[in-house]
Length: 300
Image 1 (tube, rainbow, N blue to C red):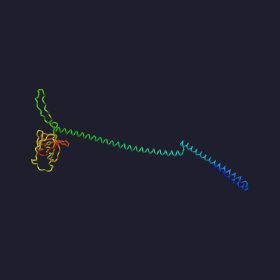
Image 2: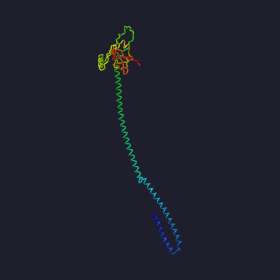
Image 3: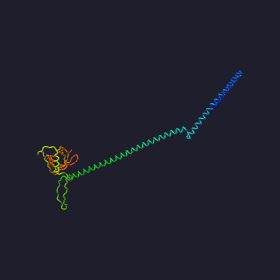
Image 4: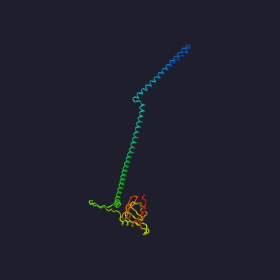
């Protein structure tokens, strides 16, 4: 640019001197006018040529300067000292650190949540295990107690009633004993133990209950029922009843129970409830007085 200004200034000065010389020459002598114009045209052509060369040189210089600047920036980029590179790297580094920090926070949050869920699930599993264990133990205890109670009831019933010993007599012929046969040993069976209430205790309980019942008209002799036991059968109200027969047992309280005759004794019968298999003893006197009434029912 300075060079161009220099050339331009020189050209302007030369043009000024030529103009003043031309005016002086025209003033002094008009004969020299045409030759002076030719000289001026040649000078302007040279000036334009020099300006064009200066412009091309200037463009070349600018290109070289830009190329050198780019090469210098490339070198700085490779060395890692370029300012723009460092600025952008700093921004990327900040973004990277921020992302890592957020990831760590998210990891910590998820870890805490998983840990809480694990502890909660572990406690719930332990509690459920303990509850199931207690429930299992209680169920087994209840089952065993029920079985024990049933066995005790069966044993007590067998001892009281002798159901297992009651076998219908089989008609057999008595043969003469051979001389060498051993003497038959009589069948010794222990007498069943009685753990139930006596007649006096039952009657006392009935009298106590009757005190709290509303008064009823006195029973007439016609209300008594005929009841007796013959040959292991019960004769009651003009009907015969035998063991394992299905009946209805009615009481004065107007309760009706579905039962089965379990056994027939000398002065009483045993009946078993079909609802819970519990047994009751009914005396002939109770049947005769109408305390209990027996009705037939179908076995189904």
